[in-house]
Amino acid sequence: MSNLPMTFPHILIDNAKKFPPSKAAIREKDYGIWKSYSWQDYLDQVRDFALGLAALGFKKDDKMAIIGDNRPRLYWGMAACQWLGGVPVSLYQDAIHTPQKEDGYPDRDKSSLLLYIDLKAGSGSQ
Image (cartoon, rainbow, N blue to C red; front, side):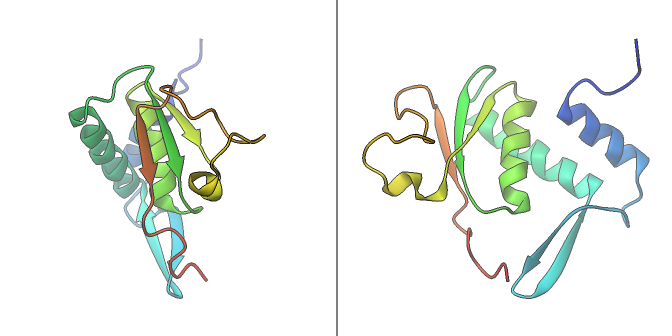
């Protein structure tokens, strides 16, 4: 059996210990300015997000529908959901404007306990 991390949260914890703060885990361009997040930053964001979800009653096997741009917050939300044993379900950004179920969209029923929408989506990512 290998000593590889078993889950993505384990990978975050291991990388936060292994890499210095100067090592970027993820970057984003916001209004033309690059912002870097270290592995410790990434871990802190995911942990804080997971604590918030848990405070809202989110638990193992719950599903969280996520709508957002390809930005760090989207991945922090997905990782936080996984951290708690939940299932992240990514939706197309226009899913909230589509009244009927179409191919490519999950059913809108009670299967999603929580909907996370990145309100800053689309801002200044040039």
